[in-house]
Length: 325
Image (tube, rainbow, N blue to C red; front, side, top):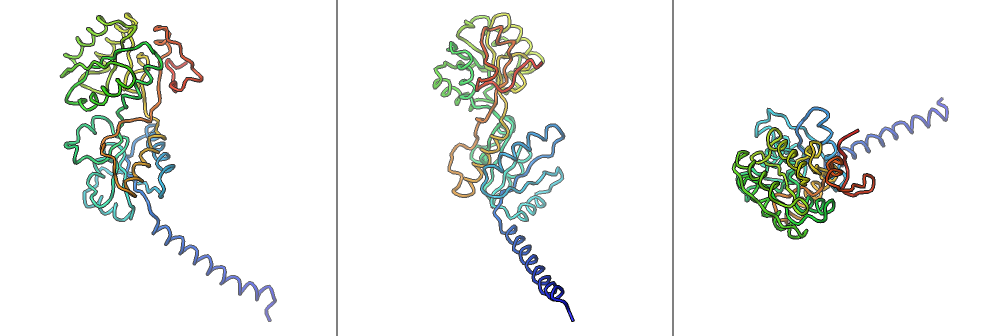
Protein backbone atom coordinates (compact mmCIF):
# COMPACT_ATOMS: atom_id res chain seq x y z
CA UNK A 1 0.00 0.00 0.00
CA UNK A 2 1.22 3.47 -0.83
CA UNK A 3 0.59 6.34 1.48
CA UNK A 4 -1.36 9.34 0.28
CA UNK A 5 1.90 11.37 0.21
CA UNK A 6 3.64 8.75 -1.95
CA UNK A 7 0.69 8.56 -4.33
CA UNK A 8 0.55 12.33 -4.63
CA UNK A 9 4.33 12.52 -5.19
CA UNK A 10 4.13 9.88 -7.92
CA UNK A 11 1.41 11.86 -9.63
CA UNK A 12 2.97 15.34 -9.27
CA UNK A 13 6.58 14.48 -10.16
CA UNK A 14 5.93 13.37 -13.78
CA UNK A 15 3.50 16.25 -14.20
CA UNK A 16 6.05 18.78 -12.89
CA UNK A 17 8.84 17.34 -15.03
CA UNK A 18 6.60 17.47 -18.07
CA UNK A 19 5.72 21.08 -17.31
CA UNK A 20 9.41 22.02 -16.97
CA UNK A 21 10.41 20.23 -20.16
CA UNK A 22 7.56 21.85 -22.07
CA UNK A 23 8.53 25.31 -20.88
CA UNK A 24 12.23 24.83 -21.59
CA UNK A 25 11.38 23.65 -25.10
CA UNK A 26 9.06 26.60 -25.60
CA UNK A 27 11.79 28.95 -24.33
CA UNK A 28 14.34 27.50 -26.75
CA UNK A 29 11.96 27.84 -29.67
CA UNK A 30 11.23 31.41 -28.63
CA UNK A 31 14.94 32.13 -28.52
CA UNK A 32 15.47 30.58 -31.93
CA UNK A 33 12.63 32.58 -33.45
CA UNK A 34 13.49 35.80 -31.64
CA UNK A 35 14.44 38.74 -33.84
CA UNK A 36 17.94 40.01 -33.22
CA UNK A 37 20.66 42.40 -34.36
CA UNK A 38 24.16 40.98 -34.78
CA UNK A 39 26.99 43.20 -33.56
CA UNK A 40 30.51 42.42 -34.73
CA UNK A 41 33.24 44.13 -32.75
CA UNK A 42 37.06 43.99 -32.56
CA UNK A 43 38.69 42.48 -29.51
CA UNK A 44 40.86 45.10 -27.81
CA UNK A 45 42.86 45.00 -24.61
CA UNK A 46 41.89 46.69 -21.38
CA UNK A 47 41.17 49.50 -20.60
CA UNK A 48 40.20 50.27 -24.23
CA UNK A 49 37.58 47.53 -24.23
CA UNK A 50 35.49 49.74 -21.94
CA UNK A 51 34.68 51.98 -24.90
CA UNK A 52 33.16 49.10 -26.86
CA UNK A 53 31.26 47.86 -23.80
CA UNK A 54 29.70 51.30 -23.33
CA UNK A 55 28.74 51.51 -27.00
CA UNK A 56 27.22 48.04 -26.75
CA UNK A 57 25.23 49.15 -23.70
CA UNK A 58 23.80 52.04 -25.70
CA UNK A 59 22.87 49.76 -28.61
CA UNK A 60 21.03 47.42 -26.24
CA UNK A 61 19.15 50.34 -24.69
CA UNK A 62 17.55 51.44 -27.95
CA UNK A 63 17.37 48.30 -30.09
CA UNK A 64 13.87 46.82 -30.06
CA UNK A 65 15.29 43.37 -30.72
CA UNK A 66 17.82 41.34 -28.80
CA UNK A 67 21.51 42.07 -29.47
CA UNK A 68 23.76 39.19 -30.47
CA UNK A 69 27.41 40.09 -29.84
CA UNK A 70 30.27 38.43 -31.69
CA UNK A 71 34.00 39.28 -31.49
CA UNK A 72 35.89 39.57 -34.76
CA UNK A 73 38.61 37.04 -35.45
CA UNK A 74 41.51 38.15 -37.65
CA UNK A 75 41.57 34.79 -39.39
CA UNK A 76 38.03 34.93 -40.80
CA UNK A 77 37.69 33.93 -44.41
CA UNK A 78 34.73 35.42 -46.36
CA UNK A 79 32.97 32.04 -46.32
CA UNK A 80 33.47 31.60 -42.56
CA UNK A 81 32.06 35.05 -41.85
CA UNK A 82 29.07 34.48 -44.13
CA UNK A 83 28.35 31.23 -42.31
CA UNK A 84 28.47 32.96 -38.91
CA UNK A 85 26.07 35.66 -40.06
CA UNK A 86 23.58 33.09 -41.37
CA UNK A 87 23.80 31.01 -38.18
CA UNK A 88 22.90 34.04 -36.09
CA UNK A 89 19.54 34.28 -37.96
CA UNK A 90 19.54 38.01 -37.14
CA UNK A 91 17.60 40.58 -39.15
CA UNK A 92 20.34 43.24 -39.25
CA UNK A 93 24.05 43.62 -38.54
CA UNK A 94 26.31 46.26 -37.02
CA UNK A 95 30.08 46.46 -37.48
CA UNK A 96 32.02 48.48 -34.90
CA UNK A 97 35.35 50.06 -35.72
CA UNK A 98 37.28 49.85 -38.97
CA UNK A 99 37.45 46.04 -38.96
CA UNK A 100 33.74 45.74 -38.17
CA UNK A 101 32.87 48.14 -40.99
CA UNK A 102 34.97 46.17 -43.46
CA UNK A 103 33.37 42.88 -42.46
CA UNK A 104 29.72 43.91 -42.55
CA UNK A 105 30.24 45.74 -45.85
CA UNK A 106 30.40 42.30 -47.46
CA UNK A 107 26.91 41.36 -46.23
CA UNK A 108 24.33 41.66 -49.00
CA UNK A 109 21.23 39.90 -47.63
CA UNK A 110 20.74 42.04 -44.49
CA UNK A 111 20.57 45.74 -43.62
CA UNK A 112 23.97 46.72 -42.21
CA UNK A 113 25.31 49.74 -40.32
CA UNK A 114 28.85 50.67 -39.30
CA UNK A 115 29.55 52.59 -36.11
CA UNK A 116 32.38 54.15 -34.11
CA UNK A 117 34.56 54.37 -37.22
CA UNK A 118 37.59 56.67 -37.14
CA UNK A 119 37.76 59.50 -39.67
CA UNK A 120 40.54 57.99 -41.76
CA UNK A 121 38.70 54.72 -42.26
CA UNK A 122 35.53 56.50 -43.36
CA UNK A 123 37.38 58.73 -45.79
CA UNK A 124 39.22 55.74 -47.25
CA UNK A 125 35.99 54.23 -48.54
CA UNK A 126 36.23 54.30 -52.33
CA UNK A 127 32.80 55.38 -53.43
CA UNK A 128 29.97 57.22 -51.69
CA UNK A 129 27.40 55.10 -53.55
CA UNK A 130 29.01 51.95 -52.14
CA UNK A 131 29.23 53.27 -48.59
CA UNK A 132 26.99 51.67 -45.98
CA UNK A 133 25.35 53.91 -43.33
CA UNK A 134 28.29 54.83 -41.11
CA UNK A 135 28.35 56.69 -37.81
CA UNK A 136 31.76 58.29 -37.72
CA UNK A 137 33.93 59.43 -34.81
CA UNK A 138 34.63 62.65 -36.71
CA UNK A 139 33.02 65.44 -34.61
CA UNK A 140 30.19 67.41 -36.16
CA UNK A 141 31.28 71.04 -36.77
CA UNK A 142 27.99 72.46 -35.51
CA UNK A 143 28.62 70.91 -32.07
CA UNK A 144 32.14 72.35 -31.95
CA UNK A 145 30.97 75.82 -32.93
CA UNK A 146 28.21 75.73 -30.31
CA UNK A 147 30.85 75.12 -27.66
CA UNK A 148 33.13 77.81 -29.03
CA UNK A 149 30.37 80.44 -28.92
CA UNK A 150 29.42 79.26 -25.45
CA UNK A 151 32.91 79.73 -24.04
CA UNK A 152 33.77 82.83 -26.08
CA UNK A 153 30.71 84.65 -27.49
CA UNK A 154 32.83 87.38 -29.10
CA UNK A 155 34.41 85.03 -31.62
CA UNK A 156 33.36 86.05 -35.13
CA UNK A 157 35.89 84.25 -37.31
CA UNK A 158 37.33 80.73 -37.24
CA UNK A 159 40.27 79.67 -39.39
CA UNK A 160 40.95 76.03 -40.20
CA UNK A 161 43.87 74.53 -42.12
CA UNK A 162 42.91 71.34 -43.90
CA UNK A 163 43.93 68.85 -46.56
CA UNK A 164 41.41 68.75 -49.44
CA UNK A 165 42.19 65.07 -49.95
CA UNK A 166 41.12 64.26 -46.39
CA UNK A 167 38.51 66.80 -45.35
CA UNK A 168 36.88 68.57 -48.28
CA UNK A 169 33.45 67.13 -47.47
CA UNK A 170 33.82 68.08 -43.80
CA UNK A 171 34.70 71.68 -44.71
CA UNK A 172 31.61 71.94 -46.91
CA UNK A 173 29.50 70.90 -43.92
CA UNK A 174 31.43 73.21 -41.60
CA UNK A 175 30.82 76.28 -43.77
CA UNK A 176 27.06 75.86 -43.33
CA UNK A 177 27.39 75.08 -39.63
CA UNK A 178 29.51 78.17 -39.01
CA UNK A 179 26.95 80.39 -40.72
CA UNK A 180 24.23 79.01 -38.45
CA UNK A 181 26.29 80.06 -35.41
CA UNK A 182 27.06 83.53 -36.74
CA UNK A 183 30.68 82.63 -37.49
CA UNK A 184 32.71 83.24 -40.63
CA UNK A 185 34.79 80.15 -41.41
CA UNK A 186 38.04 80.69 -43.30
CA UNK A 187 39.38 77.38 -44.71
CA UNK A 188 43.02 77.28 -45.82
CA UNK A 189 44.38 74.34 -47.80
CA UNK A 190 47.68 72.59 -47.20
CA UNK A 191 49.06 69.39 -48.70
CA UNK A 192 51.30 68.55 -45.75
CA UNK A 193 52.68 69.74 -42.40
CA UNK A 194 55.37 71.83 -44.09
CA UNK A 195 52.73 73.84 -45.93
CA UNK A 196 50.44 74.00 -42.90
CA UNK A 197 52.92 75.45 -40.40
CA UNK A 198 53.39 78.92 -41.97
CA UNK A 199 49.63 79.21 -42.49
CA UNK A 200 49.02 78.66 -38.78
CA UNK A 201 51.76 81.12 -37.87
CA UNK A 202 50.29 83.79 -40.13
CA UNK A 203 46.82 83.38 -38.63
CA UNK A 204 48.03 83.76 -35.05
CA UNK A 205 50.33 86.68 -35.82
CA UNK A 206 48.00 88.67 -38.05
CA UNK A 207 44.47 88.30 -36.72
CA UNK A 208 42.76 89.79 -33.69
CA UNK A 209 42.64 87.19 -30.87
CA UNK A 210 39.59 88.90 -29.37
CA UNK A 211 37.38 87.85 -32.28
CA UNK A 212 39.30 85.05 -34.02
CA UNK A 213 40.00 81.41 -33.19
CA UNK A 214 41.83 78.49 -34.77
CA UNK A 215 40.28 75.05 -35.26
CA UNK A 216 42.50 71.94 -35.31
CA UNK A 217 41.18 68.95 -37.27
CA UNK A 218 41.59 65.20 -37.19
CA UNK A 219 43.93 65.43 -40.16
CA UNK A 220 47.40 63.92 -40.03
CA UNK A 221 48.47 66.01 -43.04
CA UNK A 222 47.86 69.32 -41.25
CA UNK A 223 48.09 68.55 -37.51
CA UNK A 224 50.60 66.48 -35.59
CA UNK A 225 51.54 66.28 -31.90
CA UNK A 226 55.31 66.53 -32.32
CA UNK A 227 55.83 69.68 -34.40
CA UNK A 228 52.63 71.58 -35.18
CA UNK A 229 50.80 71.27 -31.86
CA UNK A 230 53.70 72.35 -29.57
CA UNK A 231 54.43 75.28 -31.89
CA UNK A 232 50.78 76.39 -31.91
CA UNK A 233 50.39 76.05 -28.15
CA UNK A 234 53.39 78.28 -27.51
CA UNK A 235 52.34 80.87 -30.07
CA UNK A 236 48.71 80.91 -28.95
CA UNK A 237 49.70 81.27 -25.30
CA UNK A 238 51.89 84.26 -26.07
CA UNK A 239 49.27 85.92 -28.27
CA UNK A 240 46.24 85.01 -26.09
CA UNK A 241 44.75 83.20 -29.09
CA UNK A 242 42.01 80.56 -28.81
CA UNK A 243 42.78 77.07 -30.09
CA UNK A 244 40.09 74.39 -30.07
CA UNK A 245 40.30 70.90 -31.45
CA UNK A 246 38.46 67.89 -32.86
CA UNK A 247 41.13 65.63 -31.35
CA UNK A 248 40.17 64.32 -27.92
CA UNK A 249 43.55 64.56 -26.22
CA UNK A 250 44.39 68.12 -27.18
CA UNK A 251 42.71 69.72 -24.15
CA UNK A 252 45.19 67.84 -21.99
CA UNK A 253 47.99 69.37 -24.07
CA UNK A 254 46.68 72.91 -23.62
CA UNK A 255 44.07 73.92 -26.23
CA UNK A 256 41.02 75.63 -24.73
CA UNK A 257 38.73 72.66 -25.38
CA UNK A 258 38.46 69.44 -27.35
CA UNK A 259 35.70 66.88 -27.73
CA UNK A 260 35.42 63.12 -27.38
CA UNK A 261 32.60 60.59 -27.92
CA UNK A 262 29.86 59.96 -25.38
CA UNK A 263 30.05 56.22 -25.92
CA UNK A 264 26.67 55.20 -24.48
CA UNK A 265 24.80 57.91 -26.38
CA UNK A 266 26.69 56.99 -29.55
CA UNK A 267 25.62 53.38 -29.04
CA UNK A 268 22.00 54.47 -28.68
CA UNK A 269 22.18 56.33 -31.96
CA UNK A 270 23.77 53.34 -33.71
CA UNK A 271 20.96 51.16 -32.36
CA UNK A 272 18.29 53.61 -33.54
CA UNK A 273 19.73 53.88 -37.05
CA UNK A 274 20.07 50.10 -37.35
CA UNK A 275 16.54 49.44 -36.10
CA UNK A 276 15.20 51.96 -38.60
CA UNK A 277 17.16 50.38 -41.46
CA UNK A 278 15.87 46.94 -40.49
CA UNK A 279 12.20 47.92 -40.20
CA UNK A 280 11.47 50.72 -42.67
CA UNK A 281 14.71 50.90 -44.65
CA UNK A 282 17.71 53.23 -44.62
CA UNK A 283 15.83 56.30 -45.80
CA UNK A 284 18.48 58.85 -44.82
CA UNK A 285 20.43 59.84 -47.92
CA UNK A 286 23.43 60.82 -45.79
CA UNK A 287 25.56 57.69 -45.69
CA UNK A 288 28.27 59.12 -43.40
CA UNK A 289 26.94 60.63 -40.17
CA UNK A 290 29.28 62.85 -38.17
CA UNK A 291 29.60 62.46 -34.41
CA UNK A 292 26.90 64.40 -32.55
CA UNK A 293 27.01 62.53 -29.24
CA UNK A 294 30.07 64.05 -27.67
CA UNK A 295 31.47 65.34 -24.40
CA UNK A 296 33.80 68.26 -23.82
CA UNK A 297 37.21 68.41 -22.20
CA UNK A 298 38.38 71.88 -21.18
CA UNK A 299 41.73 73.17 -19.99
CA UNK A 300 40.99 75.53 -17.11
CA UNK A 301 44.57 76.79 -17.00
CA UNK A 302 44.26 77.94 -20.61
CA UNK A 303 40.78 79.35 -19.93
CA UNK A 304 42.09 81.41 -17.00
CA UNK A 305 44.96 82.69 -19.16
CA UNK A 306 42.39 83.81 -21.77
CA UNK A 307 40.17 85.39 -19.07
CA UNK A 308 37.37 82.91 -19.80
CA UNK A 309 35.33 82.00 -16.75
CA UNK A 310 34.36 78.36 -16.42
CA UNK A 311 31.57 77.06 -14.20
CA UNK A 312 33.07 73.69 -13.29
CA UNK A 313 29.92 72.24 -11.72
CA UNK A 314 26.96 73.43 -13.76
CA UNK A 315 28.29 74.12 -17.24
CA UNK A 316 26.53 71.81 -19.74
CA UNK A 317 29.66 71.83 -21.91
CA UNK A 318 32.16 70.87 -19.23
CA UNK A 319 32.52 67.13 -18.79
CA UNK A 320 36.24 66.69 -18.18
CA UNK A 321 38.74 69.19 -16.77
CA UNK A 322 42.47 69.55 -17.31
CA UNK A 323 44.95 69.81 -15.69
CA UNK A 324 43.84 66.91 -13.51
CA UNK A 325 44.63 67.35 -9.82
